[in-house]
Length: 381
Image (cartoon, rainbow, N blue to C red; front, side, top):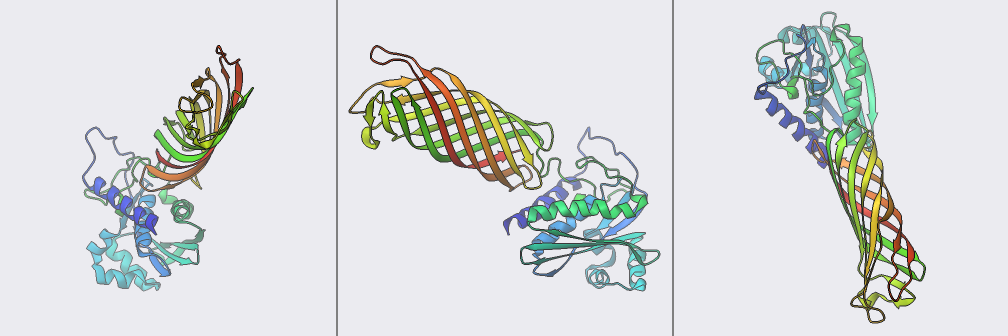
């Protein structure tokens, strides 16, 4: 599954950046870590995908490390301290003596173990928080997810709920906030350093969306009624004040190269070489349903419609409207392919009203123009 590989690569890249150290001028740490916890690698069973599991191990450590009072030991730290073969033996242990041995080797007070499996199209994630001193489970929970993206969200939510059973953990800091490290050379985000890349799979900051598709365009009014298959293009630029809301300016265009119907009562056929164009621009807002990464957006603005009949046989010339009000509604679904880029599909509906000035041979008309299109989208946010 491609997104599983993307999740793993993204978290690994985040770890590499963190190991390079804090950039000059970075914010000072917010707290000192006092409690040590081992976040064991996620175990997989059944039809679990190895690359997804590796990504979840890194995500678990990053989510736990958002608590300023916790020092996280995970992943490469475990292998360095107890050795790869010994780690494999210890990770599967459930007896109190085994847990005590692992805790003693790592010098931790708590251990977080996890298992993930896939049954059909459903992911099952189980987490257990162990008290190393008492060798008993402090808390357990299981979560279901029906997609890779939902599995990532459920993992983060499950960590938040499970660590409520650990008073020493404290409240998590916002994602992207630098968290103090208890020791020099402590682990990076992929192994517990404390932050995911700012904006990872979130709608924040700069917003840029391209849409390219096809549909239909129609203009009708007075003695004119033209419609045909059209190509569509739109670009929106703006920003996200919250994870759900996007504000932007947008320009959109629909072009029908072979419309049919009538133009000032003259018949127009597909082979007449007539071109019908609608161009509009305005400002709008989009609301994202973040759990689905789906959105609804509305743009209000102005536009013009033009008909080029210079190559037509029954009538020649052009007709261009004045600027009139336009509105555009879009519904879309996107899939993250990088920390900030998403690819998707959308359905858009447009409607407007424009006056076409009178000429020496035609009277003034008011055209009602509408368009519908299905488009592929690429969004940066």
